[in-house]
Image (tube, rainbow, N blue to C red):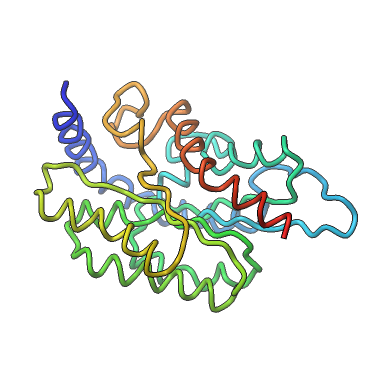
Length: 239
């Protein structure tokens, strides 16, 4: 199967399963909000006088680890790497299945009641599946970034890039992808070029619905995130 065919297959699976994700939103939001107020895993005890800093992963079902155990989602895998290096950070999984950029913009305020040191923004995929105007997605994600910075001026922000399959049309696909590169430049935030790099379209790395990564797929997502996150954590600790 060539790359284009793989992406078309992925899109069809996404379209067919999107409504199912939305039906799970209410119950998952309750569980997610409870989880977001606690550590994803037990963090390494920080040296004396060193404050444990908070990393918030704010996204949709990809962040939430839909269909998997909480400790199999990439934020928990990131916490394992943090602990292994003895870095003073705790990871908070604030992923919500079915979330759009507009939903995230409405939901972000309650999260900002706690201090945030690093903010990983993973939203937009569900916008693309609905064919929402990329300009609207840009504005919503930009507002989320602005709100985080207003409350946490020193926070490091990472934006997870997303892409749509060619079946969405060349113009839309290009405009959608540019949302993330433009935001990264305009808002001066770090960019993960494509969160699903190495996973999208690969049946072996996705669950039966063709959209949500398997345990191994989540490990690859963790690799993609870690390549951008690790240097930031190390530099932030040294500063």
